[in-house]
Length: 153
Image (cartoon, rainbow, N blue to C red):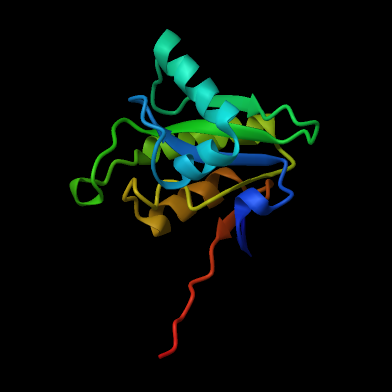
């Protein structure tokens, strides 16, 4: 079941962070770029797999960041392709379901993620939220949202 958290997931103390990736070797925008900037080994692992065996929708790759924290990133193939947001949506809802099932098997105590598939991938969060809740009745999934800033003039 989803529990919402506000804040920066990368600055959190979460040990397992899952995020959506494409199957085409792109890891340079959205949340993936933020991960790559702070944890380049996560991008390196993604690209190594892309270049050696490729990606299929629904696959999950676990990358330990190796800093002694025990932190693991799950690269989750949730979209086949990528592009401009107005050309989407790119997210695959069946792939979301499959990766969540895999994550529950590996981390039944829980894991964290941003609003996977609902950013640049163009997915409908209401649909994704329903899928996650259906697949995690006994597993806590902490979904991080960054609070919106209101600028007063």
